[in-house]
Length: 130
Image 1: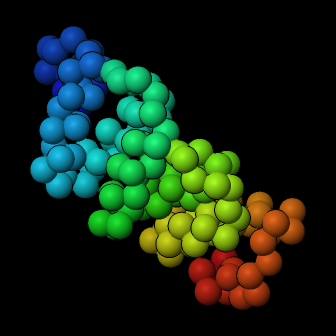
Image 2: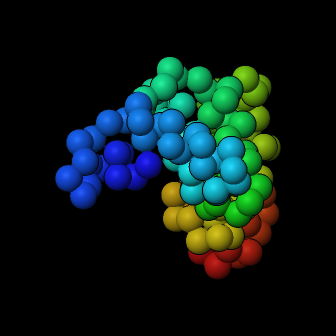
């Protein structure tokens, strides 16, 4: 799939073929492909935009430990996309999971939400060592 995504090894970039390969591998349980296919769905790369399905694939990848998928699930809850209601509480839970795995963007998101008083979770920064 990445050969078609990036056009390596003399292959012409074709996001439609790449998306099909990502889906096939995702359906077989390949975690990185789950995340890649979710991103295709979120951004409309090779497939129609579908936030609901993107959230489903991001969640599957996140539950298998994919760091950036945890961040993406959090973003969906924070902005009420993917068919979920807006929930700072859910967003924080997913950002925190990703932050614990070392995702700096999630740490920044937690700081941002804390700074604008949308969340107040005593001790979160100490827990993460930031």
